[in-house]
Length: 264
Image 1: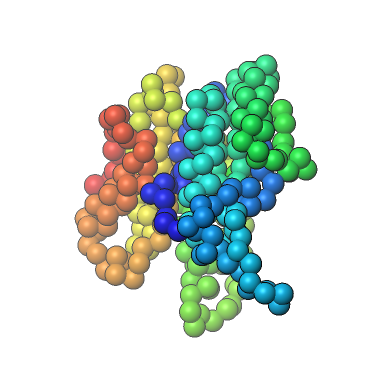
Image 2: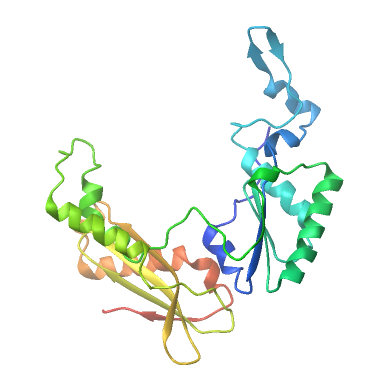
């Protein structure tokens, strides 16, 4: 079975498309991979061995490394043309500015799924909600702030929790509940990329310049420097963080200019 040249969407990119979303619904297809058939030529590769003998499986199985890309490709083709729909792995997110629009989009999605024979897990579906959860955290400068905690997880590190670690742990928790509210990406507003670094980490934030003149963050990112990168000169570290920031948010910069803010 060949791996499809089809990428899994970036969570940040998907969230950026939710700018007009006020009402949401989430469809969870039941045992999603098992609902997709495989070509006869691939059935041999899906043979399973049991105490009752060997069996050829004519549907896509969990654990097959190409399964996520295959399903992503299939579900996007199936729902292509329906507005305000974001398939992601085994979830389908529908959003709209009004409840009436959401119902229209949801009806089209369910109609397409039904016609293709894909069943949904009713207990895991969410309808007409004003908030959705994603398994993702946007914490400004997390890599830099949490570096001492990260060191505790390194190989051969001595586990010794001190008051300093407790203070850092509290700071990370406060970051999760801070009022640095992210705003949705808007291609009509100017972009600003701000970066900063330290001897062991770097962080960057992509912001919009709002009509009233203040900067509002779209997304944060940070990372810990490798042992080799920590030996770079300060100028090289600055260049490294700029390059990393542009690569991280490259999908926002297509067809757009941006302002770079750095302290060197």
